[in-house]
Amino acid sequence: MMNARFLVDAGVAVWPEAEEDDGKRVVGRCEVERVVRTILDKEEGEGLRRRVRELQGTAMKALEVGGPSNGSLV
Image (cartoon, rainbow, N blue to C red; front, side, top):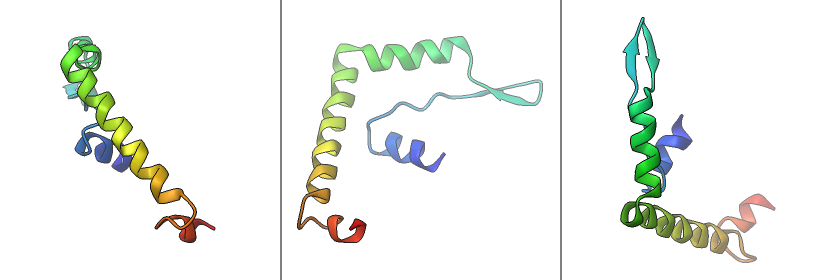
């Protein structure tokens, strides 16, 4: 759950809102539609994809030889 929340906070994912249904938390079809439309939307979707590329670049630099994470993982 923490990783999913991090991705939402980083602006690379969309969090679906769940509703209570018979004591259970359920994501309804309208909410699934909203999330899919957000991801596929020309402007919002491109913003998500752009931020994913930026985050990917940052992660790759961190793992390069001499990068801040490289020494920690080797």
